[in-house]
Amino acid sequence: MAAITLEVAKKHLETWLEAETEVAINQAYTIGGKSFTRADLGEIRRQIEHWSNKVSALENVAKNKGRNRVYRIVPRDL
Figure 1 (spheres, one colour):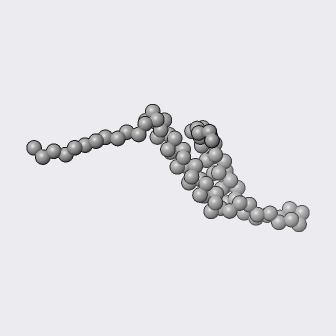
Figure 2 (spheres, one colour; figure 1 turned 90 degrees about the horizontal axis):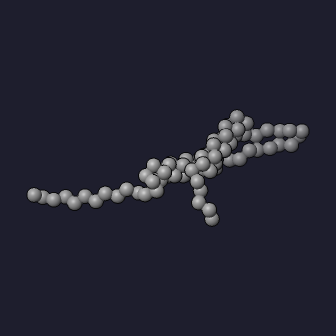
Figure 3 (cartoon, rainbow, N blue to C red; figure 1 turned 120 degrees about the horizontal axis):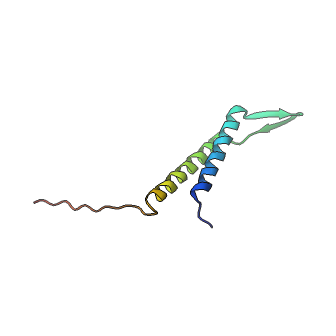
């Protein structure tokens, strides 16, 4: 499985945000006697949270040059 890049994650997040807008405007509709229902709003919000977290994590990796910074502090009583 290929690694997800920051650009791909941002694109997915944008897509899910657009989907949320479409569902909020018109959850169910009828065309020519057929009834259609859009995706579940709860699932869309879970996907938005997932991709938002993924974008944040990838931005942190880019900011820290791919490393997590860990500092070790040893308290001393002088």
